[in-house]
Image 1 (cartoon, rainbow, N blue to C red):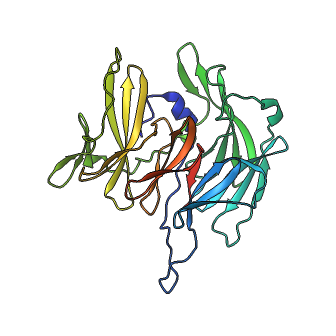
Image 2 (image 1 turned 30 degrees about the horizontal axis):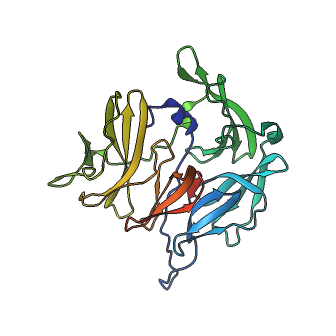
Image 3 (image 1 turned 135 degrees about the vertical axis):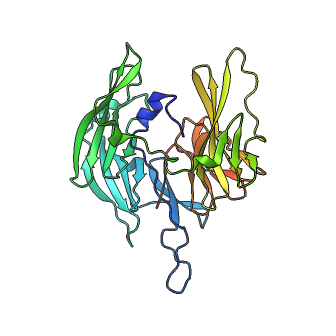
Length: 330
């Protein structure tokens, strides 16, 4: 999804990388389903690290962790790195989900005085990012919005198991832009559309799929925003990812109101017959993710709370948890 229209979102999303997906139903030598890697979706809720079992259709808490979990990321080799808050310290731990008996491994102390940060109004403090090469975990240390000139990350290097503090970028108040202090490419946001075939889609007064001998509109059933008063409204549509079957498209509808931006995510079958706007979704949130069984998960809002939603293959949508953090296991 295009993030260039709002530079702060780009900056806060630096280093974020989605995990690859594998079939949720592996088989043994006799071609019988096994229980290995049933859990495909992970999230943090009420300080607990939880997993959603897509076969059972229910969430399970990882009960071996007694400390309060703050955030988590997942690598393609099945390791879940997560932060816990214990005795006013923020500690980094790791869980190998491919092990027969996963046990939490303590990795590092971020050396942050959490006691002095009580009442911090910025909920994004402590958010973790994964570098594109998956060798570094970046922790957001200071999120001052525009109250100060610098934004800092602490970086855990997985091979050396060391932590370094860096100043990633600073805000130039005079010119209103961001100046990168370090190698921007190292922490560049992962783009879900990097290997996407954009040639099959056209954005012209709507989003169209260009089939072999037809041109199908994928959003003509969706209601765009109407009268916005004196605002000049522009619409744009960004194709993001096909589902595992290759028959449904996840895309974003961006709504530009002057210099502002709104928008929602949506899903359409490539024949245009089934179009679903994901309720309570927001293009400013992390990108939704397809699960290997064809379900889709995304973050939205429910009764003024951040919520994790799941849309099944029939288009039914329900709330899994109240959280603004999730990750997909490989």
